[in-house]
Image (cartoon, rainbow, N blue to C red; front, side, top):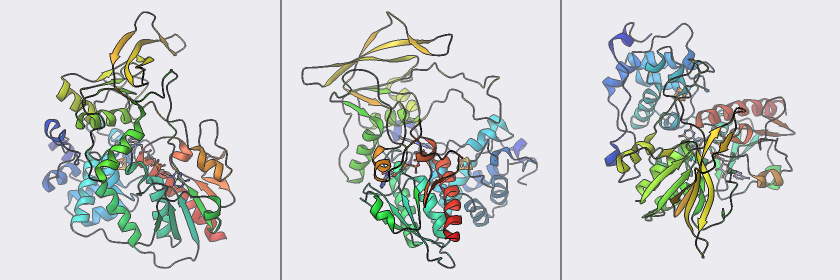
Length: 467
Ligand SMILES: Cc1cc2nc3c(=O)[nH]c(=O)nc-3n(C[C@H](O)[C@H](O)[C@H](O)COP(=O)(O)OP(=O)(O)OC[C@H]3O[C@@H](n4cnc5c(N)ncnc54)[C@H](O)[C@@H]3O)c2cc1C
Ligand code: SF4
């Protein structure tokens, strides 16, 4: 059970990111190497609680066996700890880098929770370095063929489990590289692309086939015994203002994908160089845009958020072990503070008008302050308009569902929220079709997409074994 008095003797110590001033000059991993002794002590803080909320549905969606692998890590049995972790976590090198660590906030140590995410990253990187992570091949093949449409985290998790269960799996991906938003979306510094490519290579060695640059159509899917749709929920929410077609107004994921594409091609990436940038949306995607444009040498970056700033501490309506809806300042915002001297976020503000020149290039934005009405809606405050210079506007205002092309080709209809969510909340769409990940649930988190992909794989496996 870790060290009986570990949580009293050792204080929580996260593995620090590289210094903001240094990391701004490159797109390399934010994470620094982790010390063995430190990680062993941190794992020793785990109390092996009678009711481990960290692995309950308040905590890790994968239900990782957190107290068990923390105990093994504390004892120095690292290889066994990694094996225990990998019983439920398909790709700890992704979650160890990008997971918001729901488990840590659900930990009985509350705000002082055990550093599970850092411990997880330590274990998996040690596993790769020591060649403990090797291709795991199924004992026998079932002779059944499964197709997975989309190679984001949900598609990879589905393919991984179906392959382990002995089915022959082909993943269709319309992009030129596998990984979905892990490859083209989440920026390189948060998740280096060689880490994604390393996992894809391993899955190929385990027998999964990837068909890249391939749009999955009805004809191609005909020959499979089961098909799991994992196409994501990438349709971006737009702004209800004129001049959305102006040069310099872009959706965040398009911009982030282009940046990654250029970096992978070894090209200079100066898309925001010298420009005043406005990021619309105060969430995580907006934060990724802030970090990215700073690396490209923008003249300034400002992030607009419609809603009021969250409280500093939990409110009575948001108790432990729920995820705390409190103010977080993420890596991009910290970098902006380092460069510009202040937080880039402006709350309770939105864009009223996009200003353009004769060539239809964006030159600025008229913003307006908002206030919450008694009914809880945000309404503009007359007379609060302001003009901000802007030559690049990145829209990071959320997503409204899965893309119409896949639905059209397979004659499917999404629900009112743009999701392929069956009425009984299962993953089964009828015939031999299943859905998983953001396509089923709407935009979410990598760890939730992984858990959903594994759940869909089990449902598809049951159908394949019956057929
Ligand atoms: C900028 C950004 C940053 C994020 N950062 C984080 C983070 O730090 N932590 C976190 O937990 N979550 C983060 N998320 C959310 C997370 O990335 C998603 O929830 C997750 O990737 C969803 O996985 P998915 O497999 O369902 O879909 P996706 O990752 O979107 O993958 C879907 C794939 O399907 C392919 N596809 C679609 N239709 C077809 C078709 N017909 N044929 C072939 N291929 C097709 C697409 O090309 C795509 O590659 C972020 C999201 C964004 C946009
Ligand atoms: S995947 Fe996320 S929630 Fe689960 S143990 Fe790892 S950090 Fe915690």
